[in-house]
Image (tube, rainbow, N blue to C red; front, side, top):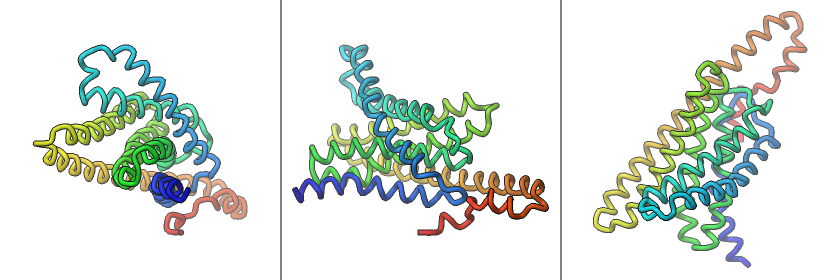
Length: 264
């Protein structure tokens, strides 16, 4: 029983840590717990959707030569269907939600969807393969799902608030997250099946992982800044309307807490 609890903790802890991290980065208008829970559960629901898509891909391409390649496993059985499933969940459950009302929200909700997916996937892998797998996945796979969510969420937020570029931005978010996920898995798989050059490929993977973290953090910083400008513009606009009604203004905008991201 204790062993099962330890394995469960190893599987879930990195998910919790990353959820707390991205929640704290939402500095100006915290998202409701119920909507975050909806995104997280939606990520879990993306698992059966992913399985359905992969089953269809295997049915069409399973007997072809490409089915035996690392590319097929990394992209067509992992990166593409998984990110497409998360994208559909976002569009169904979050896109029209009233709480998706600032730039940083896209990153928060897409990250929670990705972490919901990662949570279920991680529990399955850790219980099947054990402690060592849990440690490796805590350092690589779970943060990977988080970062793919950051990439997708960055573009979905831009699409939300720039309708004139919406189609291009939605497609960019979907394709870039698929590409990042596919390359992530492909490099790991190739490193494991090519023992002679595997070490070199793994170094390339680590370099790419660091680059992905830098990109994700840059997207987080950009949308934090966009949300700050958005909040200031909104407060200024309403300030002119409620110029002589300070009570109404404070009541309506008390939810904008400029130091919220620095609180524990």
